[in-house]
Image (spheres, rainbow, N blue to C red):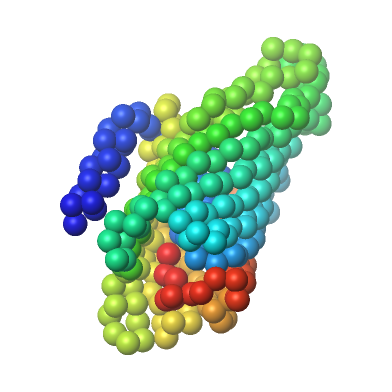
Length: 309
């Protein structure tokens, strides 16, 4: 217990040193199954090699609506104290494209028989492009010199870190996936945009066994960046007969939604989420759809117990 208290004190101290007020990165309704994207310390948490693919289509029917495609792979090493991972995120909004590639390394420290603290580092690059020439401009502004070029940076390096505390019935996650603040300037003008702002994530969840057939898992994630409104996601999920997750989500100032997941077997999972926007944008699109597929390979590492986070 003393080790757990010390670990929590470290997390609180770290939180106290970070100034944060809003969100800027791609969002995920099924974030609990996709934490590796934002926290490198999650790499290896599955205790065996696994892959995850997630596709999010936001504001479907709206011209230039945001889309996010994510692919992740992770695995523990033979020592079982080290986890490694690789993830790719392609995020598009209108003609703006951001491809991010990262490698993850995590080290696990045993705090008790069932409690672990993982330290993670992330390193990679972003390829950002924005073809300003292709934007449709108003007639009175169609010769704006700032839109007579493109923005294209082939290689913008970055790195980040994360902490992940977990036990049988809870987890806590703190991460800063990007530390370097890159700006993307156009090729021939002074147009620029800050596309790699420092984004801080704090997440946590609990697991309650209500009966032999029903488990309850509430989770929360906060996302923040200096100069933007603070945002949080809250979910409540039920696991039925160890096979079906079903739950609801609320995202502050943006949407509420439903989350489902089918645990096909010990290896394969399929998830779907649908968001209902609560802002005025709801009049102009047909909803938000998110599909997730994950597979964990058998035989490489021994699975001790079912995974709930």
